[in-house]
Amino acid sequence: NSNSKQAKILILDLPHLPTKELDNLVIHCSTIDELLARSAENSAFILIIACTSEKLTELAPILTRISIDTLYILNTGDEIKHFGESWWNKTTIVYNEKQLMRHLCTKSMLCFYNEGLEHRKTGNFGVANVCFLDSIRALNYSAKFI
Image 1 (cartoon, rainbow, N blue to C red):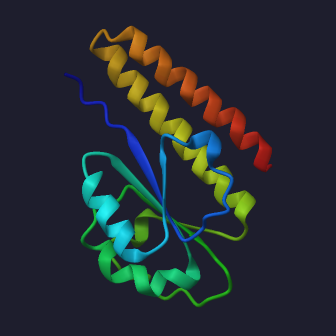
Image 2: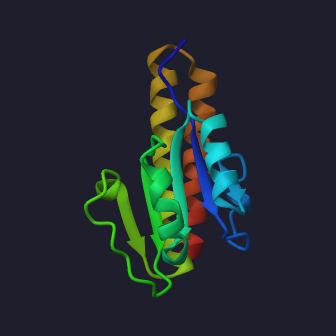
Image 3: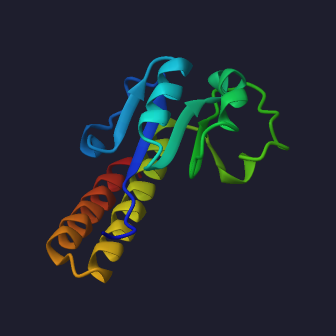
């Protein structure tokens, strides 16, 4: 077995984001409790979370209980004041949905590519090639948000 880890993107209360192209990665959560449950179910995955600045105050207390790779905050005008938190260095603030989608697509591309490299190391060339193709697909999709 390889060390390859798949990624999951947990998106909090942004149901209209055009994530269909990233469908096998994305889990839309409508509440904090649902996000917490999905993060526990998917704890073996690389976890990426996206939320609005409006939801951050509610989300912040549970972020220390979740092992996250990256947090994307869509700034909707709310004050963001969590700079000292342990997860802050994993945080990227974006200012519109196109920018958020671009970040989610390129992050997906990197995750697929790294997963492919891990499979290739263990001689799993078929699976590696599927990961590399998914990586290219995610990169191509990101171009729609430029």
